[in-house]
Image 1 (tube, helix red, strand yellow):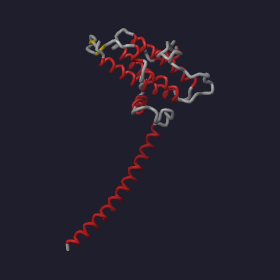
Image 2: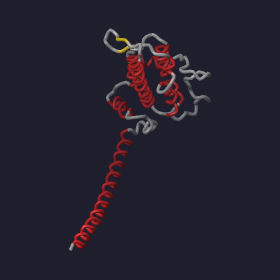
Image 3: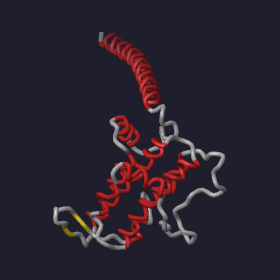
Length: 219
């Protein structure tokens, strides 16, 4: 009798395993179908941003595409991200380099418009992503600074060593142009924000063209 119970238990166990395996296969097929449908829905949503889809870290494409849909000018948003942190950096080599990075951004946007594929909105989403990440990194530098003080409004403020802006994510401005294929009229050399000796960032003359756009936005 005991052997019969054992045999029945073994049979029940294998029947359950077969059942569970089939259910797991059904779940895997269902989840795969959901993943495909989700991916197709995302591709459809971001069809206007083919050069950025799947290339920006985190969910910044979602974030800034939503800003575009809400009519928020990304050039203005990028500038405000820069300016917000600029007011927290005490006069130092770091504050000078931070300003240069904005002038470099203007230069980059004009370069992209002239010599690279992709819409202006795509270019500005890439730039806004860069400034979002860079602003967060500067905020951390200020927060961790032993020279940190408080502004009259109670915000953290500190000088920043120039060398601390010569690393990622600040140097990632150099990667933005590579997101967009070159047009036929592209110069022989790609735009670079490093000096010939490898130092960063090089001085930038900004861009009158982008400045005009900023004035139109009230900046």
